[in-house]
Image 1: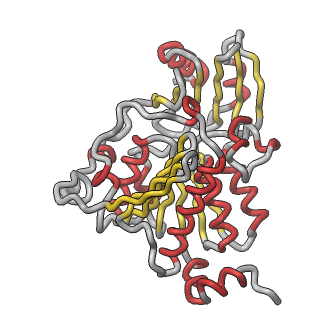
Image 2 (image 1 turned 180 degrees about the vertical axis):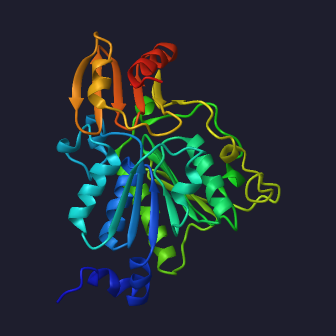
Length: 331
């Protein structure tokens, strides 16, 4: 009988495939980069894949998040992705986690995995991920994409870390919402992330070690830059974990886009969605509802309430959004 991975094995060999099948990969973020990486790793036969994302699928995601379809709209991404991947390869373990990745939870989320893939959409979370991986001595694969450009790097924390070449948190960064992004660049960056991950898991030489790869599809430019360990690096040399140890005291986090916020209670509270629905301000109309969330609109204002007590608001001023959230979630 033909082996599912026969074409892959002919290239990487039985030994590498056996290592891949016994490996565990954690993917933080199930957007364009994370979902594409998850699909490729599922098809390659990675033994266990953990999917971490706090968000739900929106119509505008489908342009680049090609694992999903229209029937997944309004579903939590981690759960919808896990369902899709299970239909692709039922022989591997998929662990979906609908959770906010922050300094309080980062270590417990990634601990015990062989490698982490970055599917995040903001640098603050990447700084937290970098510190968690350095502290736990775990490799991870950085990736980002905007417009028609992207970057990626394999980070072996014993040789260098993200902080070695990005010293401070950028005050302002472009987002997919403000500047746009093509599906070609997200597909390419995620493919390279997976390529490096599989080489590492198969005990093969991984090319982007101590290299930072820049790709510009608009002008068909691909450049790599050497990255050296900074002997004075705050994170990997001095072992100072400022982002990781600054536990989230606020329950409010700014998201990509103007006046967009994520509200997360100190602990999951098992919210009664029907009761929460009744407490949504009357000017809002419910536009989506399932066992995981209730979503409502009033003009361009948007509220999404999750069954674990979290809430996301868009186009609502922070003070108003906080007041609405406290009323709905009863905090």
